[in-house]
Length: 258
Image 1 (cartoon, rainbow, N blue to C red):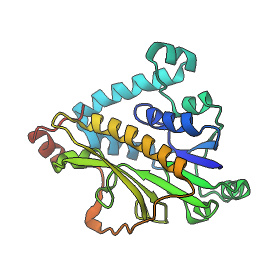
Image 2 (spheres, rainbow, N blue to C red):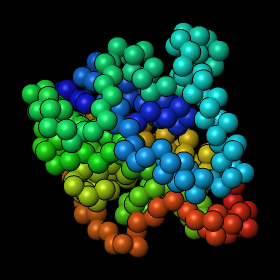
Image 3 (cartoon, one colour):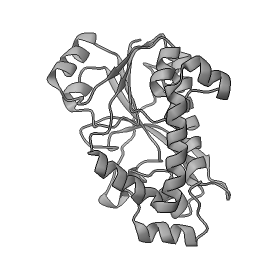
Image 4 (tube, rainbow, N blue to C red):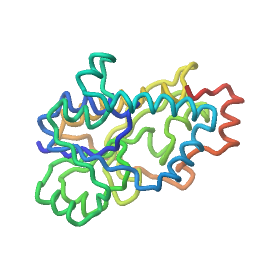
């Protein structure tokens, strides 16, 4: 089995997400493709503040910067200090998986190289870009792991909305990728309960652990994957970054980001 894993570079939640996948299937992953978000930095900062607000955003920013600094250290030093990785690329290198950073995954040259590679599985874990149909056609199977129980909460901020609406559970959905975000047929949903003391941060960590376990199980089962089921979605299922009033309501209900 030849797998190409698409993701982005983020130091808090993605390294522990990717680590179990590569620990189990590093020998099958031909390369890890870092597909960064293609939005301008100003927009990314604006959306980040929209997600967390100024107060929680400052605390998250410090955590992010600290984790990024750890990720920049030699892998052996970071592992000795903390027992974990803080860089997606560092996780890949620890498992001898080549890393390729691709600013535009729709670039014809990159698509041609993927076609020549002829992978069996394209696996997307929080990739920063939509994989175009020409790229999806390069593989026998193209799967995305989305951090909600689709069709609920397509889009962004998937740890926030279940807490905002008071859901008693959330989880990860594996679905086939199509030319629409989070809209392909569902392969499997895997849920976990939301506890009273859960925060946005703790739900993101649970999503990472649940998604990693689901990815490993699907690769274990390949090519005998579960029969896909429809993923019927409406505009109401899509959720973006919360606005100021939604953050305020969330806090008034006792919600916490960290």
